[in-house]
Image (tube, rainbow, N blue to C red; front, side):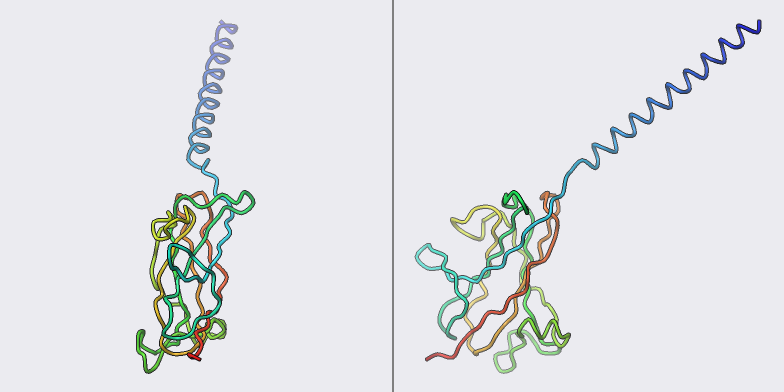
Length: 185
């Protein structure tokens, strides 16, 4: 009788251990499948360009009342250089606090240094997918926004934030850069 009780106890303990191990493996596999999406660091590059005759040309300044400035965000996976296949670039400009946007008499646009100093803040311009739909001929990883023609000479700070949801690339922010509009010669 003692031998039979010991055998039953061993059998019950063995089944219990088997159930615990199986449950652990099942939960572990489920957790792995839920968290297996790898998110890689990204590189976020802001470019200033003009577009004419089907060609993008980099610029660092423009005379006022001349050409339309194109802001171009370019996002790639750091290391591999693979362009982002999805995600959104949120373009922003540095804006003096308390000034209304689009007021030609008292421009709100400010250089990036004003945002760094806290006398201005980043204001959203537009969100655009990096699927190249906004940048003819440039391919995925790019988002282009037409900032337009400027009438008053000044420096304006720009940047973009990348929302990498489901892209495999971390969300991040480009370095801020100033663009200069000069007086017409």
